[in-house]
Image (cartoon, rainbow, N blue to C red; front, top):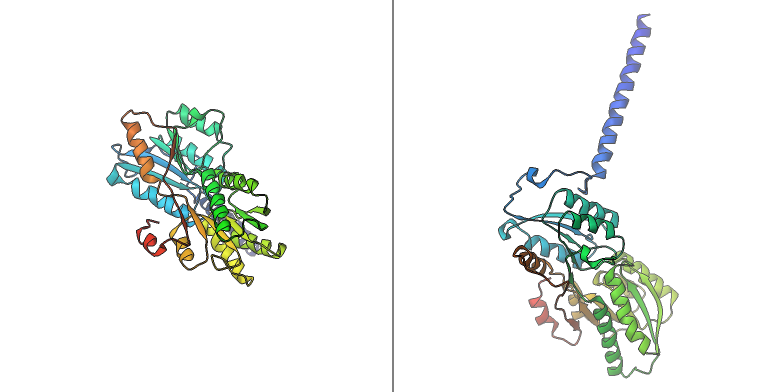
Length: 352
C-alpha cells in the first residue's frame, strides 16, 4: 500500500512539472512574439520612464532595414530627433510587413504622440488607420514612399524623392550613352530588377523608365522581376535572367543593394559589367558603396535617392508647432553620378 502511494505522489509531481514547463514554454513564445515591440496596448507616454513632456514626441514607423539606403534613412531620423533637439523619438522597424506598420500607427495613437512619421511599405490599405490618427488629432507626415487614399486630408504632407523623375532620367541617360557609343540603331536587350512591388519607389522608377523605353523602338525589355530591394534576392533574380537570356545588354536595378547582387551574379557567370564590360548597369540610390563600385568600373550610372530626410521632417514639425501651414508635397534635391565623373572627389564629400 505504501509503495502504491509513493507511485501516485511521483506521478502527480511529474504532471505538475510538465504543466509548469508548458507554462514556461508558452511564456517564452509570447515573449518572442512581442519582441518587435508593437504591443496591442501601451502605457500612455506620461507613464513611460524618462518621458519629458517638454519634448515633442514623434512616433516613426520605418519600412525595415533591407538596404544601405534604408539604414542611412533611419540614422538620419535618429540623429535628428534627439532630446538635445527637443524631441522624444519612438522608433519601430516594421520588418517589411504592412500589418506591423498598421499596428505601429495604432500604438502611437494610444500613446498620444504629437506627430506620426510613416514610411509606408506599399501604397494602398491606409485609409482606416490614417483616419484614426486624424480623428485623434495627430498629424501624419509621410516620408520616402507615398500612399493612395480616397482623401489626401488624412495625412499632413509627404517628403521624399520624385521616383518617376528618377526613372525617366535613367532612361534619358541610357539614350545619350548609347548615342555616344554609336549604338542608337542597335537592338538593346534590357532586364529590370524591380523593387518591392506596389511600393511607390518601384512604381515610379518602373513607369519613368518605361516612358523613355516606349520612345525607343529598338529597345526590348526582356523581363522585369522583383528583387525585393535586397542583395540576396537581386543576385537570385539576376542568376535566373542570365540563364534564361543569352544576350543582355542593360540591367536596370531599382536600388543599389539589388545591384550589388546583380554584379555578383554577372561576374560569377563569367561576364563583365560597367563602362568596359559586356553589360551596362544602371542603379538607383547612389549610396557610398555603390559609388565605390562605380569608381572600380562596375556600375555605369547611379541616380540618387536622398535618404537624409530627418532634417526636412524636423523643419516641417517646427513650422507646424508655430501654427504655420506647410505644402502638401516636398521633394528633396538629388543628382546622378556616372563613371565619367571625378568619383574620388565626390566620395570625399558624401554623407552616406
